Amino acid sequence: MQRTSNVFARVEPEIKEQAESVLNQLGIPMSNAIGLFLRQIIMQRGLPFDVKLPAQAPVAIGAMSAAELNAELEKGYADIAAGRLHKLEDVVSEMQRDYGI
Image 1 (cartoon, rainbow, N blue to C red):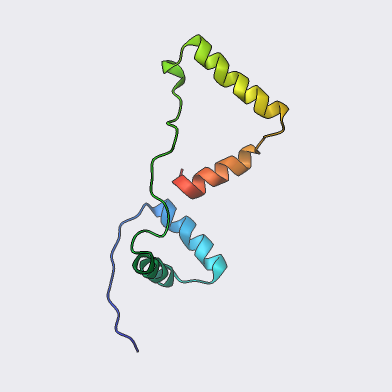
Image 2 (cartoon, rainbow, N blue to C red):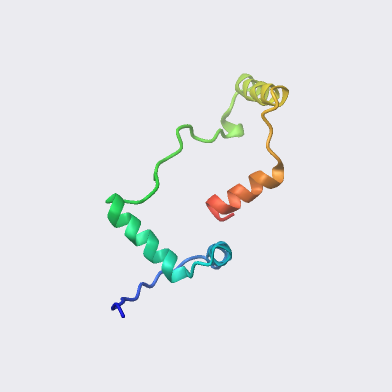
């Protein structure tokens, strides 16, 4: 049997539970998933995904003029008219998955 080493990490309980739920569905133990992640770091010579700031900072409504607010609302109306819609449940699920909220 190959020799192993321990890795200790502190994570938020909700994040751990959500990750375990997904990994259980995939049939992958947490320790194997962490090993896969570390192997990918080695193979990619860095993190196996992009770590960067968003291209556009979120818009703070309080910092907008009335004209800027109206322009943003018009963009939203145009998206609705063009059928570019997302179900609230899908957006919430994606945010929970990506940001743990």
